[in-house]
Amino acid sequence: MRTKMSRLLLLLCILVLVPGCQRTDQKPEDRIQTQSIGGTASKKVIYLLVDSLMPQAIDRGIERNELPAFQFLIKHGQYYKNMVSSFPTMSVTIDSSLLTGTYPDGHRVPGLTWYSASEKKVINYGTGPMEVMKHGVNPVLTDALLHLNGSHLNPRVPTIYEDLARRGQTAGSINGLIYRGTKKHTLTIPAWIQRPASLPREMEVAGPDLLALGALLNPFEDVADLRDGITGRMGFNNTYSVEAAKYLIRTNQLPDFLFVYMPDLDQKMHKHGPGERRGVEEADRQLRSLLEEFGSMEDAIRQAVFVIAGDSGMTSILPARDNPVIELPSLLANYRVLRPGETVTDEADLILAVNETMAYIYANGKDKPLRTVAEALAADPRIDIIAWKERGWVHAVPGSMSREMRYRSDGPFIDVYGQAWTIEGDTKVMDLRMDSAAKTIGYGQYPDGLRRLSAALHSHEGEFLVVTAKPGYELADRSSPKHKGGGGHGALRSEESLVPLLICGTDRKPEHLRIIDLKPFLLELLAHPEES
Image (cartoon, rainbow, N blue to C red):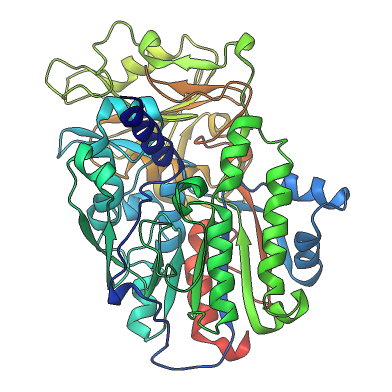
């Protein structure tokens, strides 16, 4: 019994870290193959995504002379502190936006958890141990390993890996959550997970030329010791990601584009909050080690283009004594709220999908006005924004519902990204800076808020509310993970939405500082490498 329980706990911990991470029996097609059809000897592009990296942490570390790699890159490249992430600010949605160049109304991955009206079930890619147990290991693993990249990610919207393959250029992904490409790879589930979870032993997926998913799919298994075992969190750690990239550099096998995911900082930030220092220092040491694999940091930026970025920020969650957790079922006590893991039936009035500081609340096909549900939430002063779509308009209200605005795309007002809007009501709800004479819109606390909120509301089918918490608080269902005294993200405000972007090895920059603008920027770099 103890052995079975320890295995289950390990599996649940793995699911919290990342969707899927088990061992593979390497097949010939999964070995390292990164030769471009074009065979160019130009600069490669390496993208390093440091989960939950924040500009404040970089600036504090540089002031203390604790981050020599970041300091070098800033001195010799471009450093932006305000790149706008996707919404909700959860990794699977953000990574989908990065790699497709679209918000979730385009790529169709609404969050780490959401409700599929067509399947009549809550999709959960691994939000936390208790929710995984409630929803079941089998459906969570199947959604995370097969459906996320296989069918949930919109097949009509190409990833950067698919675009590069059509050009005859090579690409690689090391521990990336979103990796859909054109080459077949085989994931292998170990027996100790396969049998209790009733999963097939092998799963075929499509990815870039090089795909590494920790021990789940390890093309380096026979050529380098990357510590991908249980003690190394099955390879889903910074050490594996960086050492794998260093091996490719050392053996001159870099693809034209390489995506490297570094997950460790996120866990430390959730536990300790945005003031966490050790995780940033560790990431800096690993980044320096990778750069010096070229010979020196100076040699690195002469030989390759480096893009280093965070994916979301975090807000400090108040300690337990300050009551930081907004228990949504309690606020909605007059409704029959589906319990985690329950089968969806007509008896349920509402269905919850909580993404830390953001949540979707679904009406389950009932003739219950969403405004009435919003009024039930308005009793809690910790709620920030409540929004829903109605007859072509997006309606947004503050948690108190003391005022309201509505908006839709197209119209006389143009925002800083060249997007057109019609807006009615109190624009303070979204902290908009309106210039009526010039017909322009600026953003305050909710960067690119009109587009990002609308994209979330149009990311999947159904009638539902989007709800966010004020800074310091997080939303919860009955078994949601909680981060009292730590850090959380998911919401729309700038603290969770603005992330750092560093570019070294080229003078080019994206058209706009939004995560959805990075894919065309990267494709342009790779299309004209001689000018990098």
